[in-house]
Length: 112
Image 1 (cartoon, rainbow, N blue to C red):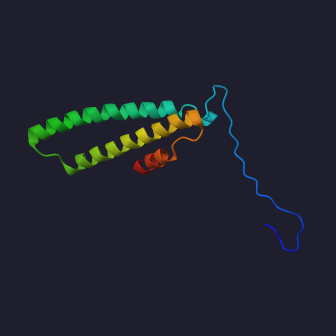
Image 2: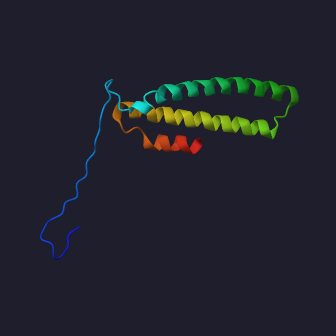
Image 3: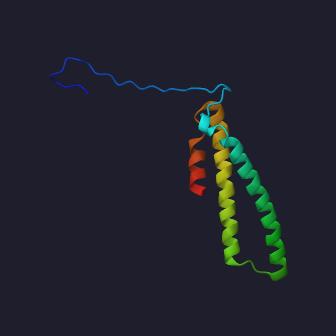
């Protein structure tokens, strides 16, 4: 911000601070176990989807009809699974480069 009466020049300084943990990870201490927690959540959701799909097929074969509430639960589980996949992708990248994939993080938040 320069003023017409000021003779002192002003400067804009931008900087970025990056610190690695002792294990060379870019994740902070409170985020250290997030990739593992996200992976476990993703695996659990994958198993649930497989089991849910099996029951879905058996009910559909026997009755020919899936209740709308069950359909809604199925869609919400798939959205949650997609969210975990996007978060996992972002965290895996963040752990190595300290930036991650902001688009994947945003999509994960959107589907959550």
